[in-house]
Length: 102
Image: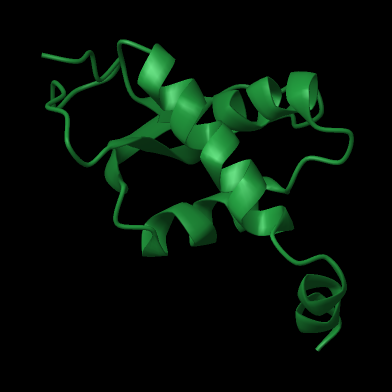
């Protein structure tokens, strides 16, 4: 597929942005929605991954855990939509939005 070809041409790119996300969550005292994570990556990377790429990669990485869902408003979308909220696997968080670290 096109994505696999992209990964072969760009070794280590995925792990680099996943490590950026690990640092972002390490510095945060709460879980972050995928939309917030992506917004943070915009400041650090020229071409940040999509929300879908972030979600699928963090779900398979054992350093992260899904805390739940939150509603994300958007200027581009008329309706709010649900986004996945992630935290670090080795930390404890409240089980409700805003998923503060305990």
